[in-house]
Image 1 (tube, helix red, strand yellow):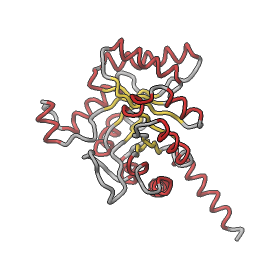
Image 2 (tube, one colour):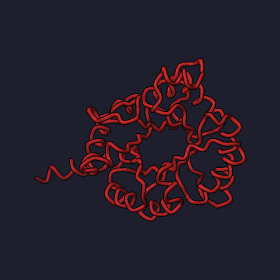
Image 3 (cartoon, helix red, strand yellow):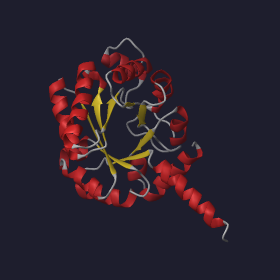
Image 4 (cartoon, one colour):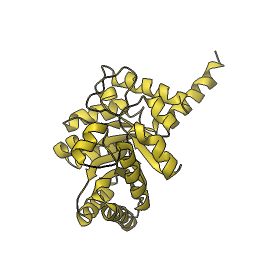
Length: 255
């Protein structure tokens, strides 16, 4: 029996490393629902993502709730406005002590630079570490035909994602948010140190919901993703903890 203990310790260490690559999306309408999920799932994920629904409903106290529980915070509000306005919003998040936040590449190079500079300046003023500024490329809900027809962009969806990723890198962002379908190409042009956060993660056989360009956790890691964002596949599961463990097990196989 004593031989099993070292194996268990090694397994737990590996899980601890891989859990830092899992970001759980708190796509719920109330603070209480968010609290329950964080309390239940913090052993399985290094970071929790707060998006438009929960932040609009509950505001900055959501950030305080997650910080109080010792988890990292990814605020995904996809800022897209004039540079000065986005810079001010980023400064506010820096003061709240978030670990990651998003801006949208469609805001342009000047806006991206303003976000990066504001983050660094405010962090220095506060005596802390700036959050990772991540530029959102093409949303996972787009598919090729509708993207071209509705957006009027002559490039293919993948080409546009790569173009935006390169612009974001040149503007100084720490990385991008991109669907798993574009990860390998973005990694190829932006290099190994550029962070790629990947939503659109679905375990095999899980419903797609409103996302079109998806992969399994293992496939996304194999393509080169640094972090995987998983929401409903975990939070809406009958047993969210078991669903998170299953995803970690699959991720572990690809390390």
